[in-house]
Length: 117
Image (cartoon, rainbow, N blue to C red):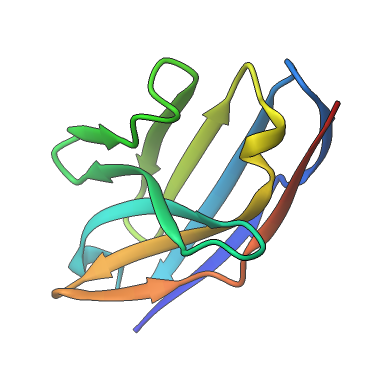
């Protein structure tokens, strides 16, 4: 099993920056990739960014050039970060960390990001 703990959400003005963190523990050696998803009220959950164990990344078109996903790993933990710059009101959502382990997703509890005008 993989356990995820997220942190870093909050309230920020448009144009500002926030960094989200997510630390995985447990069977971290089974993790193939980690990602951040988000869900705004009334919207479907969408994947924002993904980073593979190799370090290669994918981004949603809506965040390219503004968000950066990165990772750091030790023997027993696997941490992923989402640096969010030039935030827009449309980025307001609950952000979820996801770990893909042996083909199955594991979800964090979510952290609220609110961007004010």
